[in-house]
Image (cartoon, rainbow, N blue to C red; front, side, top):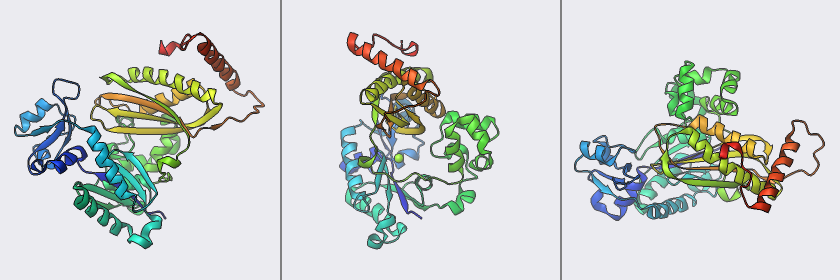
Length: 383
Ligand SMILES: [Mg+2]
């Protein structure tokens, strides 16, 4: 059995600010953009402000109404990046098996570190204490046997929590929770499940795999496994992750319309596919990145059959978007990558499903585009 920790920083942006300005520590304070512009919302609120119910994504005006003494600080992302690097560097002292999940959280596989640093709980206590004393920041830590359960455990006590959660207690701890609480589930999926009478994680655990797959495709398998606390994904440091090709686009305005996001994905998929084909590569994992107007970023992926076709990348991207789209959360950036790239096998003997023909067509389009200037030929959905 593995020993995996998920270290999640508490109220990260505002805690970074308090560390360089101690006067923010005991008063309600929040990081927020200029009310006149798109960033005029609360990006992070400290625990004093939360006592007044100040929440992330609230507009500055709303927040000031319920908490008139709220001290507002403009975001300084460069500084948060710097603090984040300090945290990850401290964590890497405990194990080289470190996977960064976002600016404020990372998994560490400490299975082989126990002889040096003690059992996982002792390691977690040490990490939390050092982050507080040496970096002036707070974190919650989840301890488990896999990445998913470590993440779920880290959410259970904030701030400064340390929580263990193992497969053996999933039915007792996770099953009573509403499915929105399951890590990796989007609002759209939660709504669909609710419609089918699946309200709690326990309901999901009792659902048929065949039903979930027919309703959600491969993502159905993800749901089926996670509801039982199963996750075989390994902690993988990013530099050892396989080759990938990705594009992202910061939007000129925040969007909430799924179709608008799909149009962006169509353009990006075209560009990825072209570049992958030029290098004679194929990929089998499609990953979508979404950055919300709160700067929170999520990434979700699915495995597909090896491909270099725009259509396949685009379709996989759309199905991820559909399962994770939340109309209540404005998006400022979307990205898509084709991962697990490898050299395409030279000999294809059978043209079973017309793939070869399609590939030939797309390659011809690439040639025409490179001859006559990019984008002379476009797909219907990107025009
Ligand atoms: Mg986090």
